[in-house]
Structures are given as C-alpha cells and as structure tokens.
Amino acid sequence: MIQLTDTAVTAVKTAMSRAANPAEGLRIMVQAGGCAGLKYMMGLESAVRDGDIVIDQDGVKLFVDSDSQAHVAGMTVDFITGLESSGFIFNNPNAQSKCSCGKSFS
Image (cartoon, rainbow, N blue to C red; front, side, top):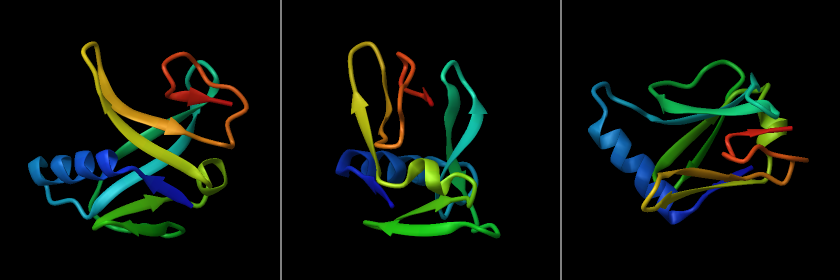
C-alpha cells in the first residue's frame, strides 16, 4: 500500500519520541484543496479509527482512512534534509500532476 523509506521511518520515530502526547503512529490522508485539487495531510495519531487500514513498517504504524486509500495506493514517502528546506516527499503513482511544492496533486 504505502512504503516509507528508511529516512522517513527515522523522521517519524523522532517526531513520535518528541511529541507532547503519546502517539501510536502516523496518519496519512488526502483532502480536497491545494493548488492542484487534492492535498496530503499528515500528523501523529494516537489510535486507529473506523475504516482505517493500519500498515506497520519497521515499528512505525501508518493509519490511512478509507477515503484516502485509493489515492495513496503504491505511494512511497521519503524524508529529505536540505539547505533550504526539509520535509516529506511523496512519490505517488496515482498523481496525474502535482504542484511545484509537491504537497498537492490531481
């Protein structure tokens, strides 16, 4: 379904260890919006919700709601660190186009 690179796993584990509230894993979802029509949303999650699929990768649980599953099937999530910016990068085979920031797609 979704793959995290080793650097993404490390970034999520670091975020979870520093979180003010306990987190079970990372929620990845798709919502309407952004400059290309759909946008990725991510955040630490404390529990599974109805309709979620849960993917366990290297000790990180990924929670994906039923509405987002078709949009993110086969996606790889990476984390990069650069001089000008750092963050998650989405390589989504379902995206027909994406905006220049990479956080929005159609």
